[in-house]
Image 1: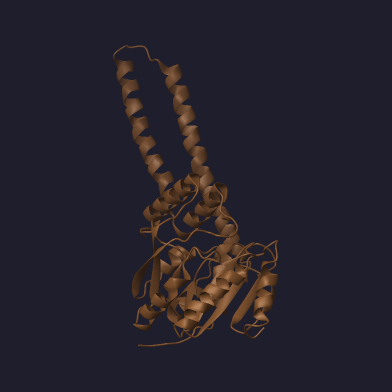
Image 2 (image 1 turned 45 degrees about the vertical axis):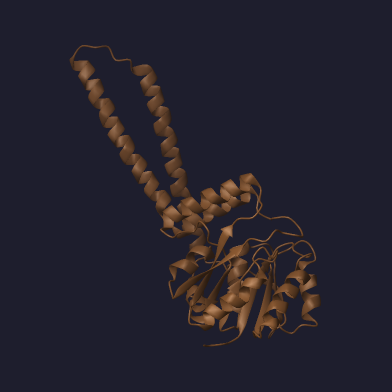
Length: 310
């Protein structure tokens, strides 16, 4: 059995009402179980008093480290900022709204102490959520699972990583990483814990259907080339279709039958044009991703840091 420092990484965006409540829940359960810990709050460019609340807590609790971004860089950037800051022998990611239950942390830590290097939090249900959001999320994870070959239907960002796994993730230079997929891709000795998604008691979800759609497109193209293969498949389908139409046209020509060409030609042009534009759009998106990677801008900019070794 091993033991060590647990780093709890909590991204926060406009969560001023949840900071103190989340700290109390996490610190209370870890202290009760005798687990040495640090809590890293990452303020993702909030427009409210999120970082002020973090600072107020850090003034009286030395185990708190607070990072504040210069603007909103997104959850993935906040996750990696927390991983780069973490000093623990293992690190756990969880949401600031406590939909990831703090009560599960001792179980995850126990499994790590038994030798597991990645402890995945698996949702037994998605809790109560907007039907449109639930449909969009479900569709995204089905597509992502097909595209990556990793079952992500019930996966979440709620997971504990050994220091070796954290270091492996930090070696990856992507400007737009997808933590949920990368943490599965790296391998290591894995196990699972199951949890019920808690209801959010304060505030509202920051994820709209539009944001989730953008998030899906960004992460699918950053982790998989499947959309490019879609263009190839559609090209093959239309090649077969055009050969069939050509054979029919030649048959009618040589048998002296009149060709009914106008409607068919217009439909073919519309369909082919639509597929071509879709293909060009997909290729253009991948080129834009290459452009972003080549610029090699930092994933995030830290405006202020409190706690730890400042």
